[in-house]
Amino acid sequence: MQYKRILLKLSGEALMGDRQYGIDPKRLDDYAKEIKSIVDKGVEVAIVIGGGNIFRGIAGASKGMDRVQGDHMGMLATVINGLALQSSCEDNGMQTRLQSAIKINEVAEPFIRRKAIRHLEKGRVVIFGGGTGNPYFTTDSAAVLRAIEMEADVILKGTRVDGIYTSDPEQNTDATKFDFISFEDVLRKGLKVMDTTAFTLSQENELPIIVFDMNTPGNLLRIISGEKIGTKVNL
Ligand code: UDP
Image 1 (tube, rainbow, N blue to C red):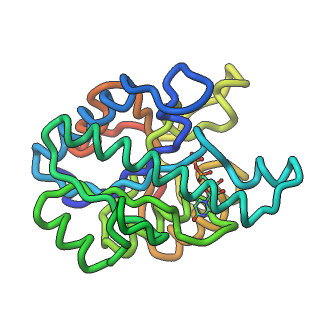
Image 2 (cartoon, protein in one colour; image 1 turned 90 degrees about the horizontal axis):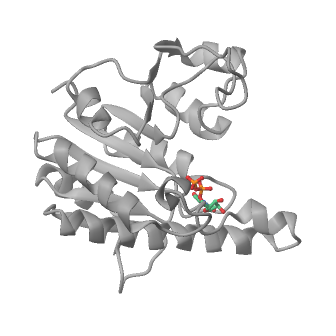
């Protein structure tokens, strides 16, 4: 296997499937099966899950809500998604732990780095909820932060497009895909991979990011096996 320990970032929106809001149980089950396929190969899997399918602080703020209050709601949304993903992973026969960046001890372990690493070493899937635990951040930043803390080999950003394009392929039919791109080129070309805070944190820590289509069955396993799927952002 190409990677021993990975950090998988899943957006909240991806969990909606064809719905407009919330969680699609079928999509959740599909993702759990994808994750199982790499856990079975002995890959250590940490996951950061977003909350955009339930609430985004910035959306609340645009309608007059206090931003910090909204961000707290967003962070709780990621814990809800984390619980759902945990349940579905367990239904598929995996051992899991959910760790939250905000204390919610009755439902999730608090985030403790050494414990999380130990879980990974024991083959448990570790799901990180609560983002970074701070308002004004995103779960992309949480994904990079946790990946660095876990000493993951790579961040796998599962999306509904199959990589990074010269422009938005959903808007522009002549957009072309990169197989590889440097951090610098992403910034220079103004391409959207993650928000800038998350992206530069990854760049500074020389942590590669692979953007790939999570909705094509088998992709996760293909990446782990060394196939060139999606776009890899590297130094
Ligand atoms: N959030 C936050 N701090 C964090 C991570 C997330 O305040 O460290 C809040 C923020 O309001 C954000 C929401 O949680 O909009 C959901 O996260 P995100 O938008 O990153 O989810 P995704 O787009 O991946 O579904």
